[in-house]
Length: 287
Image (cartoon, rainbow, N blue to C red; front, side, top):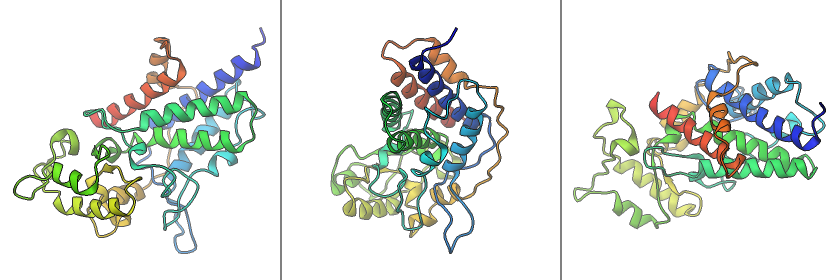
């Protein structure tokens, strides 16, 4: 039986996310950096782009995939990656997103990554069904893939929201009477070397960034501020240590997505994508 175009579109949208999660779960990928090559840096650190390319290759092998409907790979890659000065069209570029968009702490249930994946899934679906140009579908696919991939980074499932507080109030709210910033296991994880660590210096650096970009710096990730420059921080250094190798099988789809799909969430596909994002954060936290 020939499926309608609407059903076909919905089907290959699902396949895109399944292919994406194949790479995240089955692939041997050690970090998800966004840095791209430049005249001064010959190494390509853009693991987000690598994940997109691997997912797309697997998607193309599925009989339901249609290039005349789904955004082209090049259109998606236009919206991924940043340069050394944090500019670019990807979500990691300064001013293109707020910090909390890239985080979800499953222990505190703070962070907006699930909301962002749900939003860009909906935007991708609508833009394809309404036959918009490649620009919006490409951006939607890139941002959606980026935020899901962030949930596989250990630093992106830790930390805490500033909850709209100004710089001084937030600093005071997590600083004790002795001037120490002692974060509990829910916030900093259970990594033994960091237990009992005083994060006051990191918080001070966060405060400097918050004063400069208060609208965008709305999450405290201490590992992003543990060096004189964020480019040298533990967080970014981890993301630069890239091994672009994938062992994913094109015939295996995400068991998490399959499970959520079977539950037939009454709120539709957006809630399924949101649930998958949270489940990925839980997986990273527990492993």
